[in-house]
Image 1 (tube, rainbow, N blue to C red):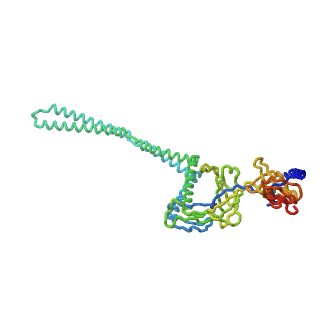
Image 2 (tube, rainbow, N blue to C red):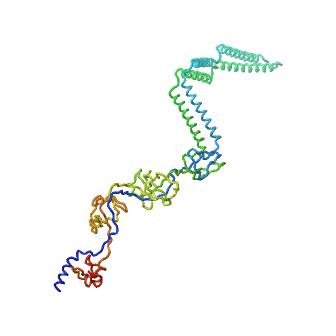
Length: 495
């Protein structure tokens, strides 16, 4: 018995290393096949209308019409409101007249001069020459000057005679003569009168001799001649380049004024720039438009949502990428969109650097509304016609980084097969090598089949654990032997 026991012990110990300590059952299987794996980047945002325009008047005229209210559906070109245009109409008319005048001026300037125009200009030159000559001849003649000299001589002679008469009268007068004083007074009076006559004659001579044409009259006559001659030369030579440019500038200025007047008249009427819905009306007829927006119009034919993408992920985003959107309050068909804009300047909040990315929906459902929250999945890559396996079928060693899957090699037989992984998501991975289409992968669940008991194992049919501490569960031995149930370790009947 001892020898047999020892032999049995040795045999069982040698075999006991190959006995599983846990029982395993298959919890899930899958057949390897080809599929598609899509890598996405998730972010959230709110829906906003593709167009949100605030319309306002650029004039302070009184509002005469308001044709819409909030919620109205309008078409592009519909008149929403207008202001009084009386002053604006007059401004347009005045600008049109000014433009016509400027155009006529250029036309007249560049038109060839007629023979009649040239003849009239020549006559003007001759008339100016005659006027200048006449002005230069204005003054005293030689005869007038000679007469003035004679009159001066006569006055001087009369003065000399008066002086002589006075001297004679003074010499012959006697003091006791009754009329002596009267004669002296008369002589002195005659002398004074003669002196005055001489002064007058000298003044008349100076005035007559110095009288000639005035500088102002000569200057005016000469200026008229220069102007007449320049006009004649211009008619013969035609306009200069400078004159033509100046006339064209006048036309351009008048045209700009007309364009501005027409634009102001057009701005007096608010029209819908696109099909949409009136979101707000902030004016009433009879009011003067305020500086704030008069009418807000939104386009809900499509929507946009703005995502905040972390700086470590932004390099994977580009315009044109497809996006799937999960609108939380919308249960209709899948919503898709396209990345249409990436802001070049980042935003920074509490040290977190993000970039704003605009996504435009490809098609908007009627149930969508501005402000709805969306969860966007930006498609980074699509891998088609590849082996895609759920990550739960893959075991990766944290130390070595190697990955394996359990492949069913035969019914009830499984092998750990090393595999090479490609693109991955949170739930699936692409396997680029290690398994083939058609193979079966399994997930095994293991349950405890042994404990810490150190009893003897016998390689004898029907034997179980001897004196083990709870060594095996019912039927715990390796089938088909049928190990004993704990704690006795005795075999079941037929064990």
